[in-house]
Image (cartoon, rainbow, N blue to C red):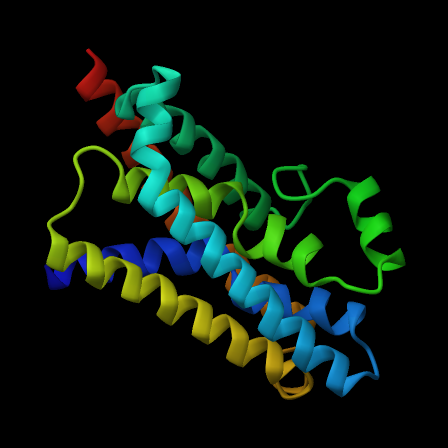
Length: 204
């Protein structure tokens, strides 16, 4: 159980990328400490609610749509691999947010739901991980509680980093964030390939 929780923590933390989210958050909330605090809290709460909905109803949704868990593993693996490539090569592939959405986000007074909660924190990658982890077969009740505890922990870390944005930027800077992102991308790429192998094995 400890191994499962640790593996899920690493995977979910890498997908959410709270460290590389800090430079974007700094740019969107520059010079507004109270605004930064409110946006960080609201974004994390909204993300938690979205992920909880998919954790509880994801299996039902896949069954209703006639999608097997193996098919979703393959699709999720491909999507996570694209995100990993984006992280490793430090370029935007559109897997998270388009350039048009970025422009729109700078015009909005409330950035907590878009783009922070979705697509950055509870984005396609995070939702895919939650669906694959809490889908069929469903984990044991105790393990499920532990897994969602990991989700809460990662969201808490994300909130802490967002609240400490000025300090994090002073210590790490944009370059440091990119280095961390590239290292995490390599790990995510390997995990994404494993998802695809598991999906193909189960399907065939």
